[in-house]
View (cartoon, rainbow, N blue to C red):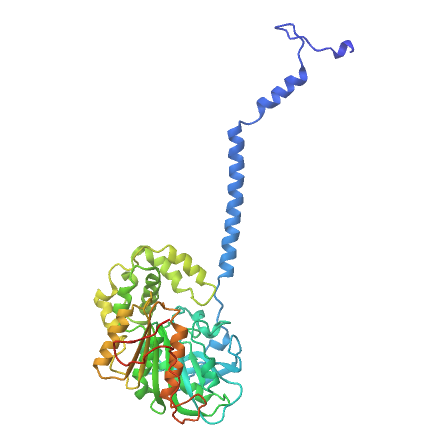
Length: 453
């Protein structure tokens, strides 16, 4: 080793120093403490997480947006006074049973003041026109929401959640499916406002007659509905003689219908589905009726309620609805709606009159229903029977609000065919149709015919 390369002695000890080691020691001494390094890493990870959450949130909002109703649903400025007038129609083929033709329609109905309004919906008919005239089946759908995009005709699966209509189409019947006012067309939607929904159902029958479906139609018709639609069907039956006198109502089939609204809402108060349905009712009625206010909701529920009112059960926004429903307090109403003086009148006015329907009525109720309490339906049926009105009541043990739809729909088909004196081929020879309930004993008033499953 050259003399110039010799290590420099340490002045204090005389021992040669290792300058490379000293440099390493200096570098180590200048590194930040370990806890600071971890803090930096945590901050970086938090920043990444925030970015991921922001992107995920934005993606969630994009993927769960409601579709906007297209120009088809915008009514013309001048509406004809005649209810049931078809304003426009176009072919529709999404999610239809085999052998079925469909049309999306915009037709006229009337509001509470008797003024014309536009309502959207669908009309279905068999592709092969049957021999001889056929009746119309008017379907009233269950709750989908109260916002414009919640119209079933706006979805790719408009028949989801309703009974299989193949049997009706095979019999050659024409099916009219209203969206109700304010769903599809400009609102507000009169959720559980019986007269408005009932008129829209009846006027869909007129629209089906006006549309060129290729099927010769009789003046006879039947009405089916589920849940909100069961309520609408009962009100349509109640209004039929006055609002649709030119046609003959053969019967009304109501599956798990809302009847005594105050009791219906009280029975599900505090449940998740009860909270959502109460919000739909409050948000819809405060927009429809003067003098009602959302202060019936507790403060914590009011902001989520606004978002829930903008969501639809039958659209991608149902995922937003689930998120908002999760944030609701246990009870969303500050006091029972039925006890509020301002709400008692509308609740009573929108309860169908048990004796107000002259036509025969079939009521089907699942006994495990978590949305429409069976005891409320049974009470309404008992009142109808006490009024001497023709009634067929069937209960389904173990079936809930949705699982009852298909078996009850089978029963409604057979029951309706009997009412129409149709043995299945439409020749009107009056042969009795299959009851549609295997193992059931048909019954009129309670005790109900119980269907074993």
